[in-house]
Structures are given as C-alpha cells and as structure tokens.
Length: 466
Ligand SMILES: *Cc1c(COP(=O)(O)O)cnc(C)c1O
Image 1 (cartoon, rainbow, N blue to C red):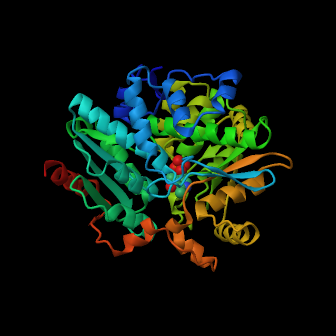
Image 2 (image 1 turned 60 degrees about the vertical axis):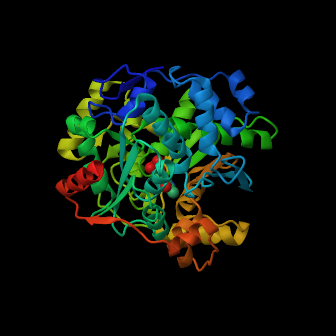
C-alpha cells in the first residue's frame, strides 16, 4: 500500500514518508493508492478481537510493511495503555436502536487521543530510528492541541507548537494545553478564530523550504495516519453492536459530530473497506457549511459563529478534499481545478449526479444552540446520561436523520467535563474527574500573539533555536 496526493503530483510514496509529509507537497491531501477491501469472512473473524488486536489487523493493510511487527505492537500497546477503560472505546446502549460510542476515555477526555496517542509514539519512533529532529506544528479548535501535547510531552527529539484561538476554546481545553510544563511545548494563543490559525499553519506547510529546514510535522487531521487510526473504532463499535443483537445487524448508521471532516471521513473509509454502514450522519452546529454541501451540493464557507460546541466551530474543513476526491471519481486533475476555483472564488459546487451520490451516503443536520442544550437536558432526565455538547449534536442529528427501525451508533467525542460552560446552561451541576479538577490549580504558560504570520514565525524561530 502506497500513498498519492488528491492533486496528483505526489506519489507513490511509502507509509512513513506519508506520515512525515502530512500535507502533500503539491498542496493536496495524501490518500492510499487503493482502498483495502475486507471480506465478509475477515469481518466475522475480527468480531472477537480486542481493540488493540483490531488496531494491528487494520494497520497492517496500511503500513506498507515498513514497521517490524513487534515494534508496531509495542507502539499500539503503549498508545492505548493510557486509556481509562479496558475496552478503549466502549459502546453503551441508550435506548432502542441507539447506541453511543464513547471515545473520550483517553488522557485528555476527547476522541483525538485515540489517534494522537499513537502518533506521539510513532513520531518518537521515527525520531529515534532516523535520528531526526521533529517539530510538530498544529492549529486547534481545542481538543487536538491538548491531545497532541499529551502525546509527545517530554519526548526526545520532538518539539511541539500549538496555535489556538485566544478565548475561543473552553476553559478546560485551555488549561489542558497550557498547564503542561515541558521545554518541548509552546502554546501560542492567537487573536482570531480557528480558521485563521489553520490558514497560517497551512501557509507554513505549503512553503516547502520552510517546512524542511524547520523539520515541520503535522498532527492535524490532514495527516493520513490520524484518519487510519480513527477507522478502527467504527469497526470495533459495529462488532459490539452486532454481538449485542445476536451477531448480525446488517447495516448500521453512524452519526458523527463534525468539524474538519476527519472523523467522518474515517467512517467513510471504513465503509469503503467493507464495513456495512448505512447512513453516515454528519452532525454540525451553526457553522453548517457541510450540511449545506450535503443538501445543496454547494461548498461555501459563511460567517464564523461561536457555539456551545467549539471543537466544531470550523468553516473550512481540511479533510473535505479527501472526500471530494472519491466522490468525483478519483480525478486528481479535476480536484486541482476545483481547489484552484475554491481559492479564487471562495465557493465550489458539484453536478446533480455527484450530489445524488453524496446524498446516497450522507445525511446531515446542523444543530442549533437551543436544540443542543435541550438534547443534553433531555438525555440527562430520561436516561440519566450526561452528554457533552458535541455528542449531543450527534444524538440530535440521529433524531433528525435516522428512519424508524434503523440502528444508529452516535459518536460521543468528548467528556462533558470539558464543556462545563454549556452543561451549566442546562441547569446541570456535574462533578469533574480528578484529572480535570486538578488542572485549575496549576500555573499556565502561553504567549499571546496577534493574527499575523510574521509574529508566529518569530515565535517559532525562538522556540526552535532555544
Ligand atoms: C475535533 C472534534 C470534533 C470534530 O472532529 P473532526 O474530525 O474535526 O470533524 C468533534 N467533537 C469534538 C469533541 C472534537 O474534539
């Protein structure tokens, strides 16, 4: 298995090279040269595997035999040993036809840990194997930053700098990032919103001289390894629900709280690999550019809105290009033209035919603020289950998009303690896990910068040369 760019000018490259490249050098996104096909018998055999065993099986289709089995196994064991639940991603039944896939049992209480704990191990492995310096640079709407920092704190050969939008992440998210006291960690708090942070990071990665002379590496979901790691829990959850229903459930819907389109793209990939997925339900908030795409076939970022689910406050979804590539028939030249058009005109639209294809695979619902809070209150009252605002958007979207008699698995992407601001608005008082309550007493370290690229570059120079 090798890797190629959605824009056709990179490839084929190996697995470790794809991991280290992050964003493809031609500005596109790396995808596998072909999607592995998993047979029905293999799927059946996988039902009995532990989470870690399943990771190894699935990764083996993607790693191009570049990592000795024992090394990969050690990295996978280390990655998931930090999780608080022995199942890593347990599935809970909420009521008839609705299951919740809990993805928040990692060190920072959000689903990003599942991929980023592994990527931390993997960066460390490559740094040691190749004697390389690795400077991880990323933008975060809150959870990626905390999770990536947790994945590589104190690791030799690695420095990490994370940009977050000042004042636009939750208090707990900010504390998780800024209370880590390690020389290899730099937090930049940027005047602006997440899209500003992401745009600047993309500019730095697009400058190939800058990227190579500064050893830049990506943790954002532009990195294919993150997508690969996230496909695993779609399989795992499906198997748990199948077992709970006597072994065979046919197709199951997945509802995915969506921002950058990384997580739901992993679901799409799992489906293309052969997992019996019904609808992929895309849940968003008021930043509903992707909902509009699925309903109208027009992709056009609108005005940024701050919501109760800040990790989804994204207008330009960087993984969306991966999906476009597939839905438009893997036509790299076509993608290059479309993305150039998007850059020039700020919008793209697809044909009626392509839109029908999109709508045969996806449903979407943009959940408004009050609806999100009502869903949290409702599930607390009726089922005694406290949803975080992102997970609540997922559930609200199931209610909107799933049909009678279908089985849906809704992804719980964060623990409610991370978003107490919204939980309080529902009149609910929650008790925090110790790992979170102890953050409030720790000193914070971050540098406030305005939203100019030169200032970011100056901070990075200082950090890299320290
Ligand atoms: C990152 C995040 C999302 C969005 O995931 P994408 O892969 O960016 O679509 C949803 N919920 C939470 C809690 C997150 O941290």
